Amino acid sequence: MLIIRYPKREQWAEITARPHLDHSQLQQTVSGVLSDVRQRGDAAVMDYEERFDHVRLQSLAVTEAEMDEAETLVSDELKEAIRLAHHNIYAFHEAQRFSEVRVETQPGVACWQKSVPIEKVGLYIPGGTAPLFSTVLMLATPAKIAGCRDIVLCTPPNREGKVNPAILVAARTAGVSAIYKAGGVQAIGAMAYGTESVPKVFKIFGPGNQYVMAAKQQVSLGDVAIDMPAGPSEVCVLADETANAAFVAADLLSQAEHGIDSQVLLITTSEQLLTAVQAEVERQLLLLPRKDIAEKALENSRSVLVGSPDEMMALSNAYAPEHLIIQTSDYEALAAKVVNAGSVFLGPYACESAGDYASGTNHTLPTHGYATAYSGVNLDSYCRKVTFQHLTEEGVRRIGPAVELMATAEQLDAHKNAMTLRLKSLAS
Image (tube, rainbow, N blue to C red; front, side):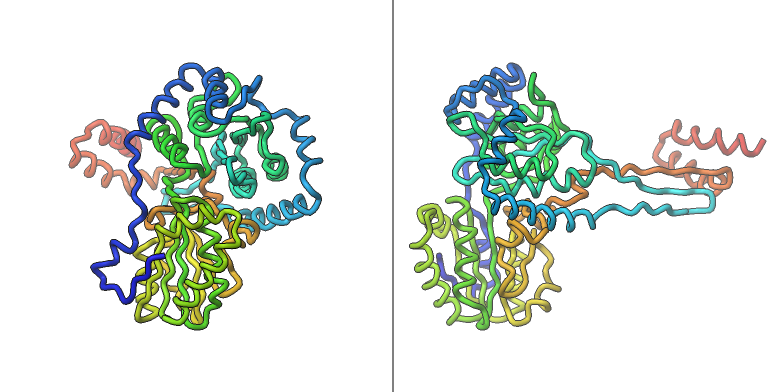
């Protein structure tokens, strides 16, 4: 990790910059695959599965027999852990239910909102080197609570045409409607456009590599909504002289092992802690099975020494991290100053892994600085708010003249007329 001591504000933009990726060629590749899936449906998806996942599928749908088989392949201990995580995720998101409020803006003018679930949602779950069954819980649980009618999941199969059994157990636990063996760009296309097997959905959720992210962004331009724009995963750790260096190093490495394009940022007020964390990172790195991946990510990463807790917090807000860990003596005071972050972890024991798996908060979060404008996935992500209004005769009299004046000022005579006719009917 690059060490930067007492940077000036002019250096902050460079410190908070993410690794640059050239997506120009990638966008063309993604566009070609999406177009093919739109035109040829299942046949295209199966062809790309053979090409990219090295398996020739006879059908895309996961059968009930395969779901039952998965139950026998996952240990009782892991199934219990999945149930515990699901319980906590359910409890946290259940508490986010919308309460309808009826407002009388004027006598005779009533306005209110109703929360309506998105009927069809698609969940993308990566397979590859790390089959993210925890993400199934994070995405499907709030969808089920919201009342989404169809919860469709796509995930790549292995070379034997099987889906990771833990993904299937998590999907059954969380209430997924249907599962399809499709990965990458072809899976996003299948859910965006619909095929003979995979139904078209109205909104797509889930992480993925740069191809999946590009595909989500392309289909969002006119075919389907997506949860959020996203880039590689990241963490920022704020630590002072009271922090446990081993804990801090472990948190940095737990994020760095996600992928070679991940990024971690340590901001500290203690030179002694900075040195200790560097040593711990080197020691713990050697013990990791995904050492090579984490090592590459650390090349994109920085340790920054600053002069005060306020400067620590200001730099973090400028970075707008996906995950923010505050391991300081005054973590509650700093937490009150958080403006830009996806999810915040407070104190020495709230490691990012807790939120990634089982504390209850959602781990699908804005990356690449999008925390300045986006929330992580929550219950509202699966709902739409429909507004209603009702006017009585008194309500028309109260706001009618203002409506007429405003419509006239905008030169929209038909708008004015719609209100004028009602005012005249009340005057007669």
